[in-house]
Length: 93
Image 1: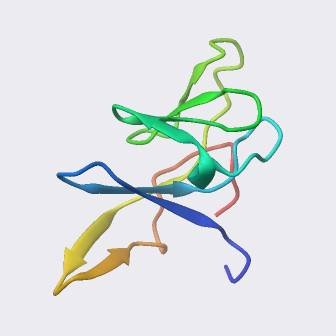
Image 2: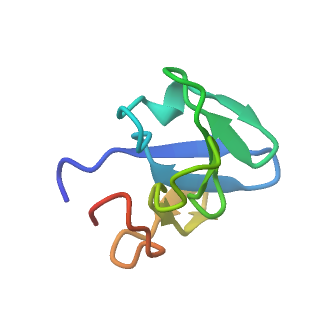
């Protein structure tokens, strides 16, 4: 667990957390452009849904996804649940 990279995205009304690496070529999703509830990988423009972790573009390879993590804010501190990430096959827990 010590080497897991997590990206946190501030959508204004909520925070979403995902694994930081794109399933394509491990691009840093934290450096991507957020559009709605998706992020576009800065390396090859793969579009990842921040709520589900599913890759929306390209549409082929439906088994590609990233881990998503439940988040909450408690007294101004962002808490991320690591023990039970939403099941995603593209990234090891």
